[in-house]
Length: 118
Length: 112
Image 1: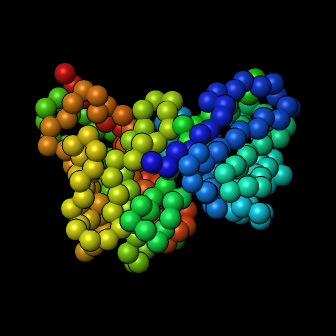
Image 2: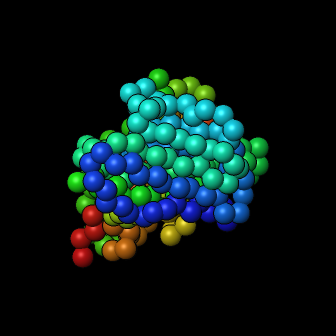
């Protein structure tokens, strides 16, 4: 089945530094990827939608200059948390949607990245 | 605005008992419907999905869900739960090839 590989699975960084999270679609081409953030004991909140070769679309309230998304190829999307602060500590999950015109339609999720900013 | 509601934040059932987790959505167009399960610190695993056809959908791990258009609901059921079913369950709804909207989640605890 379609697999999205997300790395790293956890990262600890110092306040003020930047962290890059990668999501790769292993056996399919992901023209669209979604980035979610999940705080403890809460649901997933969509941060942004990235389309290959174009600028990401950010949800209201998400700082696009802080959360940089790059989707330069059909198999790789990255999220960079710039100048991270403790309040950015969260669980970040990427997702790709599969062919919406077929019975295989659905979304596949990465395994998530636990970011802790100290 | 599109929204998904899971009315039960936390449910506790005894092992072997039946289970039903509720999910309702707003917005009139027929959506794509999903149930996911998440163990602590893990990503999401798809249990089942519906986008057309038979409104009773069978999924993995013995779960099923029924789409009721008149009630805008997609409740998840399992006739007999196992201790390994303890986890967080999320209902998610999509419209076309757009983003998924997630419910708040229901935490399931299993009593031995």
